[in-house]
Length: 399
Image 1 (cartoon, one colour):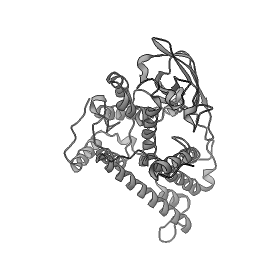
Image 2: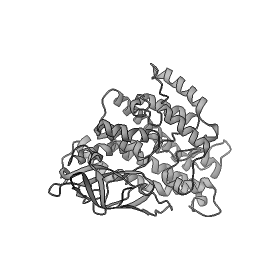
Image 3: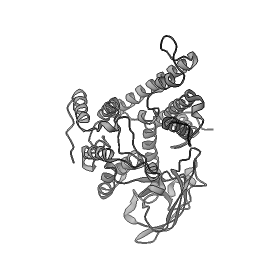
């Protein structure tokens, strides 16, 4: 591993990170992005420069910059990780290592896993060598997740799992699944355990669900007499609910990230100048649109400053988990407004999501607008987050 000791000051770290990026980021990838597992399955294969960049980032540990170096991370502080993200954005670079393992499972295993589990599962995530999916929601257990019925029986030397999950992102292209199962039918939250399931195990089947924008990253996942080794239990039997709640905090943290709310590559002002035109002073011709773009950019900047303030609080040991529900909803709103404005700017060019007559950028923006509708649902719906905020942040009485 090519891990460097962190410089003493943030200024020194920024200078060294800027130099390392200049020396190692392939210019051919400028403006590129992380390639999702399902898009690789559909034909968007990473090229040689992408793989080179991924290997360099993995060796540096900067795919997961704040994770401990012992498990493949960069060992950076939260503020240093933000500086790194800023420097990458400055040159049009991106993090080629991502997925649900990075956003959710890795931090959870680091907190709750045994040393053997950490050494087995975390380094492959840090290097982007393995894909994980999340087996939580079921046909009869969505927002009321504690009603899940996927059964897990203790068979002595292994567990036997039977049941069904739904909305399992990337299940059809994933190597492993972190899954909530019922190990005690007499108790609700207190009867749930947290298992790590190899998706290649006999009896596991994933069926993609087509979405409105033509993407199929959601799946139905079926478990039929699936044998799971005992060492794949994370935490204790019947203690999975607490682990799951902590994992969902990591998910909301990832979903609220500034890097996950901006999906218009050349920015709204440039997009508007290209599609709407400019006036004699070089401003966006439509005054009302110009005002709404300005208001959105102010909200997005304010949101970014809020995230930075929160990161400073984490560094000071003042992290508040319930605040993530507020940030998750705010981030979803900023992202949805961004995509709404982008498609409005496109006008008639934003009417199609496949077929001839549209540029690649237009198709991507329209597809992104359609996809953005799920931002207020996944990771816990907008209403669920408001309930958490009301109870844990505002301390409002329950009805």
